[in-house]
Length: 210
Image (cartoon, rainbow, N blue to C red; front, side, top):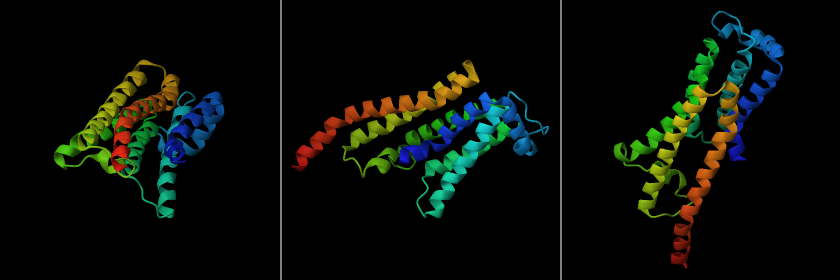
C-alpha cells in the first residue's frame, strides 16, 4: 500500500497524459477553462494541453498526499516535502511558460537531491541516511551500511543522468512511458540485486543470534 501511495502522483501523471493525449480537443477545452489564468498569454494549445494537465494533476496529487497525512496526524517524510517543493517549482514553470522542458528536469533534480544528501551527510553531519531509514528492519555491520549508502547515492546519480538522456533525446510520449515503467523497473532490479547481496549478512546475523 505504501508503494502505491508513493507512486500515486506518478501514476496519475501517466494516466492523465494518456487520456488527454487521446482526446486533445477535450483536453484543450478543459485546460483553457481551468489553467488559462496560470499560463502566460492565457492560452492552452492543443499540443501542450496533455502535458500541462498531467503536470497540474501531479502537483495537486502531491499536495493531497501531504494533506492526507497531516489530517491523519501521520509523519510526513522529508523526501515527500522535498518532492512537493520540486514539483511545485518545476511543474509551475511548465504550466506558466507552457514548456515541457521544465517538468522533464524534475526527476533529475529530485534524484540528484537524494544522491547529494546520501553522499554528503556522512561527511557533514556524520550520519548514514540509509542506516537511519532501514536500521529498524535490518541489522548490518557498519562497513555494509556505508557501502549501501554509497550504492544508493550512485544509483540516484545515474538515474538523474538517465532521465536527462531520455528526456532530451526521445519524444515526449516515450519519456512519459519510461518515467513510469522504466524507472520503476530499474528501481526493482536494483532492490533485488541489493537484497541478494545483503542476504548473506542477514543469514550471518540470524546464525549469531542462535
